[in-house]
Image (cartoon, rainbow, N blue to C red; front, side, top):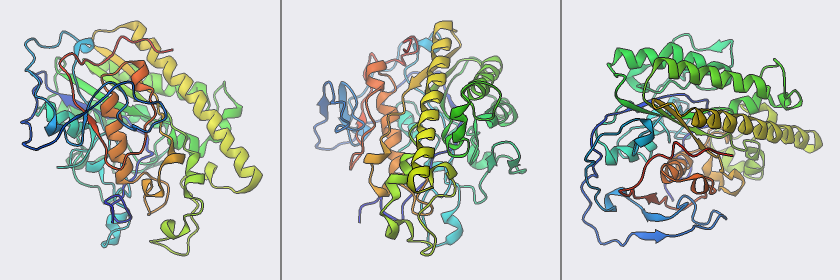
Length: 412
């Protein structure tokens, strides 16, 4: 049985705002593994996603230990526009699917998160970065048995965060854009200060938000302007307020902002897979109550999902506008990158979802998104816009001597 099948599965679709510290030290490659393998060189990868995460020119391997060794950097980075690599974090519940020990099925397996996890051996962005810079810290490890829930405004776990597991991962399960400022102000910034992260050290943040907003506030697409919760204007204001707070209180930060992907595809993705989706609790339908806007059948359900898609596009316009604003600002101590969320869930196998709820992405999906984000990390706008395809075995791009984070690209 392939490793991504039923009993090895995790979750995603969470609001995110977290930080991973990167030491300002020379970037060196880990020792190259001794193996008989010829790295594959790709040029101008097809936009149909067949190459999946091999999205642009470069050398792609199944293991970064097979990459050519990089020379140590001779001079330190001058500012955030002169960085080679760094990373951020995410929250993950039900991440391993149904487990023999039932409570583990509903735990937050944060150490396996594509964006935040640093469990040994996990394919995550922090671990891929660690291959080139062993001095990084801040990624989540292990699991939280009690999910750190914060669904919008009123329903928040009063226990807050668990630094022993979370580290610099401030994300909370179910969070929406309105929760972002609290994540940064009430946990992330204090955690950085408590653990002696200084202003002159470079930090890299992965920033993802919007999935839960789509699932609960989809009809806000009919109110594109004004104060209605979930409206694009309010969404933009929440994100801007959070980024400005971060810029004011934390220096030398690069934010990699992942766009909002098409969550409505969860409906078509799970339909017809009753056996898989009922594997743990056989008498509950496949519908995901965690995404109320996506569950209905018939014409009404199709209309509501079209409203989700409309709101997704409006959110992404707001996010790309925010990115452009910061790139034109050209702050030497704060930069924001744009990573389009070209993640075609409709083309993914059902094993791309957790069989706990047939809603949250599985471990296999986390691994592929991690590879996709990593492979695009130093690419230009064209390279970053290539679709995240599903590959049986994720391939990883080797860093090259000239690679830098493309912070000065102004996105359309």
